[in-house]
Length: 438
Image (cartoon, rainbow, N blue to C red; front, side, top):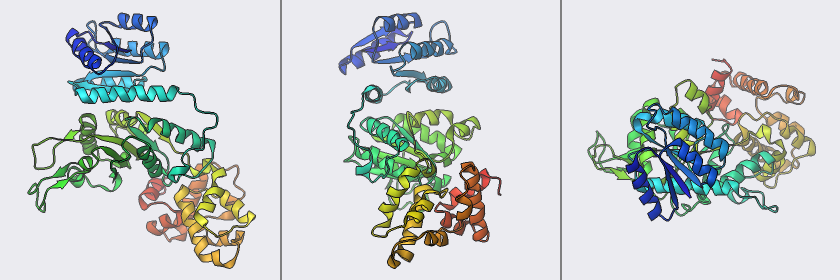
């Protein structure tokens, strides 16, 4: 049963007809008191509610009602209806626990899809996992048995068959793209395209052409029509990597297309509709960026209906031997060498470990078992002797020390320092800013 709440009888009628035709049982309410009375009599599967009621134009009644619903029926998804003029109110509702928000006037097909997604996610989240459930992720190239990683992957597998937008967070090199591909391959869209877009490397001037496409003659050099990434992702998944690096002006355009699933190619007035699922990733602290007003709050809540935080390699050291064996092939490591590998700080995470193991396998693999001295000689700029005795050192201090030594070893060359750490130059630059080294 879906409970629809709005003080506008016309909206209640139109939404009720739409949902009943789609096969849902519908109950309507015009006031917050009616909503609470319905919920106390029978728990709905979903609540679709407006934020403004006749006695308030500020949304205060709607926010108060939402908070009461999250206390009475915390596992029931609540979807908000809002006009573009009150998006800030919808965002506040998302912060208080709403599942999603729909803008008025709504698109019927999009509304039905969002409702189906909310119901599907709620059912999967409430399902009891099997006692003999296998370690998730192995079939998709994700190596690890740590409880932290397992919890993330189980959540990913539960939400993969839904249409929910997913935000994958974590440091560089933790495997965000692998998890994004797993979500796609476990979804009904698996036969469709998986379109990866690196927003961190995309200039503002190219954003519209790359994402929305262009028609011939739209600008100098546009000799043919070109499909944008959103159109290419039709019936599939678009993976928006490094979304935290998106320029402020582009964030507005991104929000519109994620909300409406329509856009106009450059040089064209013909709207194009695309049926895509969004998975985003970032190593940035988006809530802090929202607080600093460098990332739009409404866009943040649009992309993170489900958030998956991937643990750093430092948080799952029990997986390091498994990863070493995966990357090393036939190369063997002594017990002392493996112990040393398990104690490195790895600011570049799995990517850094992979680079190190492949380097050791090439240089030392033909000479028998890789020794602890081999690791010490080829680990790059990290001071192993200090790491061996740094159990009490905070992880951030270990990371800072590794960055400082990498810079010193590379003579201040950022590209060489980033390479020795197994991270990108852009990631190294962000760490230098973080630690006040520039």
